[in-house]
Amino acid sequence: MNIRNIRKLIDYGQKHADAKRALDAWHNEVKYAQWEKPSDILVRYTTASILPKDRVVFRIKGNHFRMVVVVKYTISDVHIRFIGTHAEYDKIDAKEI
Image 1 (cartoon, rainbow, N blue to C red):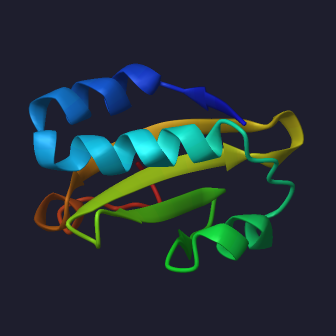
Image 2: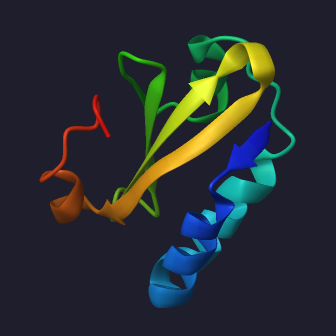
């Protein structure tokens, strides 16, 4: 998959050292993934939440952090929209971000 807005992932990992290893692991797995439909994501990420508008919520580092992405399956793109703590996630609308 092509990961768009990767700078957001890098910056968050630099600011939050406790999330960096988990974010790096996610990045290294997803860049080689071949998702053609939402259920493909759930094979590896069983706790991911599939939302409307092609959004997926990943629980990072045991749900200490959450990441919202938009997946465009037809062009193999994953666009990072949000990374934050669970408390920060509760303040956004993941369906619209």
